[in-house]
Amino acid sequence: MRRLRFFLAVAAVAAVTALVLTPAMVEARAGGGNSQGSRGSHTNSAPPATSTAPGGAQQMQRTATPPSTPAAAPAAAAKGGFMGGLAGGLLMGGLFGALLGGSLLGAGFAGFLGVLLQMALIGGAVWLVMRLFRRPRLATAGGPAMFTGHAPATGHTPATGAAPLNLAGGGAPSGPPVHITPADFSAFEQNLKAVQAAYSTQSLPEMQRLATLEMLTYFETEFGQQSSRGVRNMVSDVKLLQGDLAEAWSEQGREYATVAMRFGLIDITRDATGRVVDGNPTQPTEAKELWTFVRAPGAEWMLSAIQQAR
Image 1 (tube, helix red, strand yellow):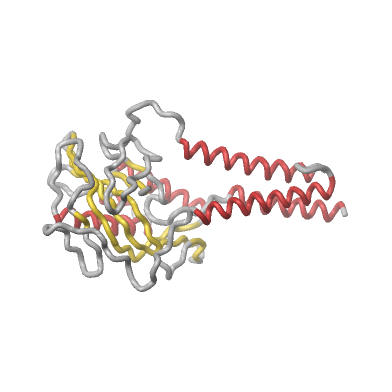
Image 2: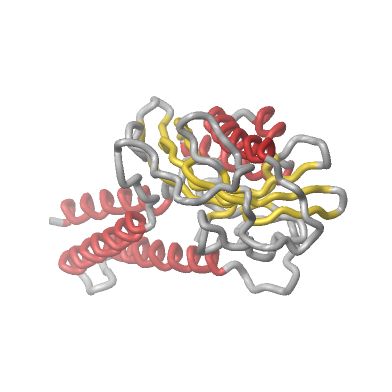
């Protein structure tokens, strides 16, 4: 009986250690489903709502721009750290207690079974939360959703099968206005696809051409995290479904434009053997994000921030 108890305890410790120490899969697209980057003086203010993103955007989780007012520690990080520490502490404390002859529910083998029950309950709760917050699937399999906005007569006319970006802004810019042309919107759409392609191949030289140094730093960090986990995030078949301008302004010799975009894509993660460990290679998913671009007047637009729509 003692040998059986010891064997079961060791097996449980190994299984839970793998669960606790293995990072959860994140969105495979560029930015990993986070809100990060800088929008100049607008970084700490929410972009105006648009028809594509009526709820606005989430606050920046990572940015090089200092907050305009003193802020407490990021709530998301604190929440994640608390929950992660609580779950890990309960699980590991209970398991090692079982190895030493005790448990969270009492002593002996019955107590150890109680720890296993707690593990199952906590693991089930974590799984349920992860499933609830997974990205939504496209509702139909017959093609992309129809564009429901109304583009002006001078609106962007993209390639066949793509949805137009609305030239009408979602609110008045707070700084000097910047005139956004159909050619600019075409550049935004191409940047969306090019960034996702470069992210999938982990091409830092291409990312350097497409994004600011700050965004390049974040992408490089994400590539390192993928490498440490032995996986590769891959995106393909990016299709713009709907989009519109939130705001455009200029400051300190730079022009900025924030665009809300809803797009479909194949979003998967593969391990070192090429096996798909997250996502579906045949089922498109849908994302809704606000991308901010920056440029010197007359230069090419570069990605400076990605924010998740609320």
